[in-house]
Length: 124
View (spheres, rainbow, N blue to C red):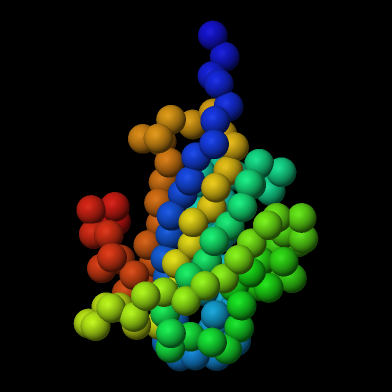
């Protein structure tokens, strides 16, 4: 019996050392590359991508990095500011990729890199 293709979402986050375009680009690409490889995501299967950044990061749009460096020109993407909760992690880029897959929910591999591992120690 063939598995049914469904829409799933995968989450991830990464931190950067400083608010610089090169740091945001590098961290974004590392995070997306890891998520895509671990979850065997093909660009054609991506429905949309949502990025959020903590308010101390404004030097670059992660979506621009994905379009420019990964060629995701036809993928709908948006960037937004994360809610500034007192005491929360700083200099953090979060992402949620919605995509079509035959994987079950428990097969989806979420990724938290750098200091972002503190966000979901249960998944690290």
